[in-house]
Image (cartoon, rainbow, N blue to C red; front, side, top):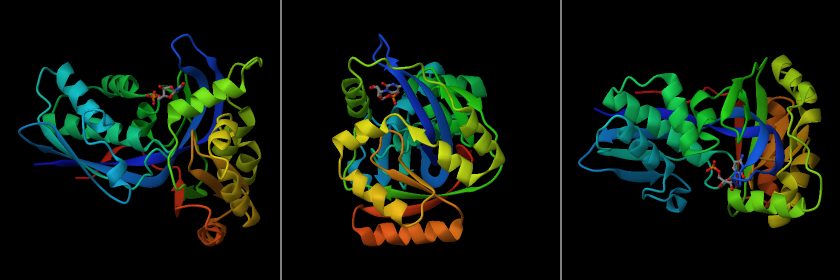
Length: 298
Ligand code: C5P
């Protein structure tokens, strides 16, 4: 018997970042939106913990115990006094080190798959608790939809979304390390007064109404200057998407994936074509939002 879980990627429609805390993390007002690009994690009983991965970026995925999927299995097994004897296979479609929570998706997917395989009876709260231990974005990968994340992003409040938003994503030729982007944010902000991060009421209203023009007017990402500073070529990709009619453009999370909000599905196709011919990125994908959270599919 095996269990397969499908888990979405995310884009941050607002990422407000506060000053570095004593523990090195940053307080956030992080408005997550799950998008229809998915990884699938399959858990199968095995003699020992093993991880395999397939997909376009598979060679960049660590297969040892640093993989969040492996860590999820180990953490759940420890809590329930059993050994993590499971084979985890990741069918990877979310870009690696792309700012779309691909690693977090695999952590949440493995957790849900192992939980179902082992019949632990863990409550939703316990699963969310383990997710928060695994990483700041992992709880959101479990719940999906749209949510405001506070603290380091792990404390979630579900948000209403009143319609479908059409997104285009341009994957870059290389990844960016999330800690490095936060370090660059700190460096760029040295000596400046960094305000407390607060969610934008106009942005939350735009999400609730499903209004792409209003959402476009209020998208923001405080990590964008840091990502562009480490990866200046992203500016050309953003410009190509803007010229092709995107309502707004932004770096997804810590990047380097860039995100383009389209008015409708036809406009998204046009933006995607223009990005493909711009030769400023590696691949281009279309994805509607919101998408459901981690879901058992077999
Ligand atoms: O929580 P996670 O392991 O995904 O975080 C990866 C890194 O991103 C952290 O080690 C930290 O450098 C940075 N980070 C941060 N503040 C947050 C979330 C992440 O500084 N709220």
